[in-house]
Image (tube, rainbow, N blue to C red):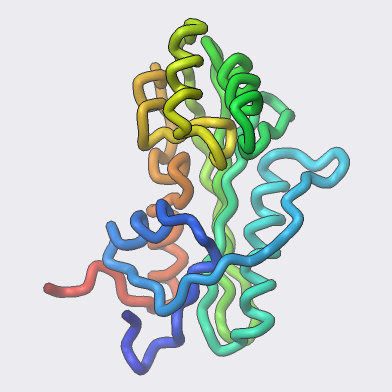
Length: 199
């Protein structure tokens, strides 16, 4: 937890993965509260801009009711070129995503927005290039059967069985999971938030 001299930290996300990633750098939010937003891309919106807009909007939505807190929000977008892949809600979504990603490179953008008391917003965007091996129909079928890709941007979870699909990754592993720790630590540290607490 933060000390009494520090503002409360709210993680504006319901993702257990983001909470676990924060714990890796010794950060435990005082509260976890997801922002309920329409995440549909705007017409012509590019992947990087889409991720950054949603991160900002999530932070602002929570900060509106908690103006004295630090609010940390993030959004992850998987993209093939200019195309934003969906957050897979069905087996058909997973199949479509994996078929598209099979044997090719794509990019994962995770934007982070940290809103300080008073409304100043500090932002970073992590960009990671990921290359999948060519996937067989049997591999796609097995992955879908496991259910791991449901609810995931691009239809896969790098921290799960999909790790076996990845031939090359250039950038931030934690960013692909959902929260780029280098960028988050830089933002929090820049505001004097304590990281890596002593045992």
